[in-house]
Length: 313
Image (cartoon, rainbow, N blue to C red; front, side, top):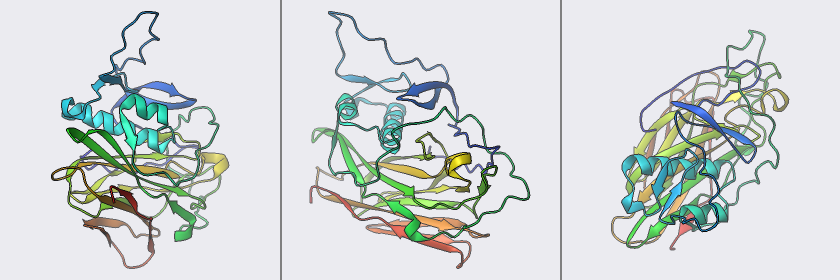
């Protein structure tokens, strides 16, 4: 996830969410997601008298990783962080799932509730839209998107831990196009999270989802620092009926970190950067409690910031 990959794709009627390097599929509570090729499904239910290993957790990919963050390899930590981010994006990071993964929530979520039902899995990938397709409101407005107060979850203890700051956005009135079209809006948008302190950066994950909570990869890691991370993503205009408002209707960025020293006070906030016409983001400047956006043009863009999420303050 830390390599810069920008894929501009367009769709046939509905968007498929492509998870890079993933091939197998799993149905999770009615939502299809893709898993690494060769990954096994969840272990079968244990029979009477079976011993359950409470020191490890089986991820949705079938990978078994230690619950203790100090015992995970770098690859295991990436897989664990990806699952935290995906579950948060889908609204499925429930208390029982958190217990299973050895997590504690340190701030309360304030974002909109997830959809209660999902339709059949989306399987079509964006393809070139007809020339007659046009976006009715590419600029929309900063009030047309809501940014949830970032949540912070902790895995481990003061003897060894990992913290995950989760930032999420959801469109209420995204750019729209006719139901037969899926059209890229301007250049890439951006979504970033910043802490108020310098931390040990252990990686960034991002998932984009449509209206029904079907999620996948989109865009690339634009900025990665000791203060936070910023993601570049291509947004699309379509309709709710034709494409569930596109593959970037909502999204979640997860920043994994540890303190320099013991556990302490930390605050986090997020910012979404939207553009249209020929404007695109060129990057972020992320510092303590600050997120700056560099644009390719001074026009056709806006930003919106979230409230702060706090731990130990």
